[in-house]
Length: 280
Image (cartoon, rainbow, N blue to C red; front, side, top):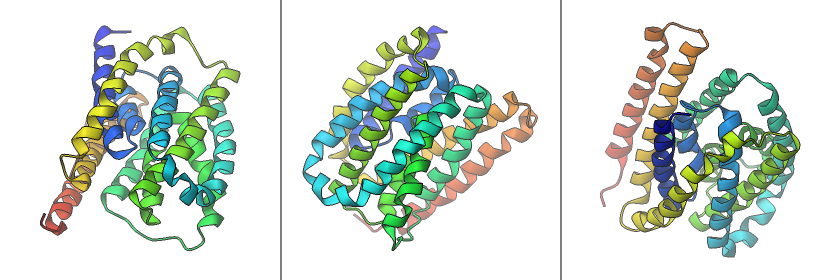
């Protein structure tokens, strides 16, 4: 592996850990789109999942007081997560890496843009969607180590308070990351190549998490979150355009029209966010 790839990995994980420290989620959803430009899911995921266990344990520990308030609401999701992790881990071990990258970007981009658009349509029968939603995020997480965007979309949609939001995230993500780590072991996905990435990720996490916690106390939470989503959307669109070229689904100039369209949509949503935002 190229030394420059490792430097980029260290920098993007530092940024992602800072965002995670500030918002309570975002580590994988910011790391993976960039890191997939240099590594395959099968190399990247086993390294990230152990880091995620540490991060999610920290988030859960810091918000443990709110767990009793959210526990009953998320139990159906936890059953679904178990099934989803089994499905997703098998997919990771058997599907072509290029198509895995493409699927990752295709799933992420609409979720990020929906978040940026501020979609809110509360679901009345929350328990009825728990198991199927859990299967979806369990599958997504074990294939990509990402579940923050759909979880944030649902919890914001259902009106979770800030501490309840973080506690629910912590419980679900520690469950899915632990189950995924076990599933990867039984499928033989841990390799020396994956282990060599951890020394470049761990220091960034140790610095970024407390840095993010400090920074969010000095700035507007929603503005910070919105800028992070813009960065994420553009990186995902760039990655999707690039992998489309790699898979020969479209030639280079046409493939990058996805990036141009995403920038236009996000630019409009960003303009609308600042236009409609109440004055401080």
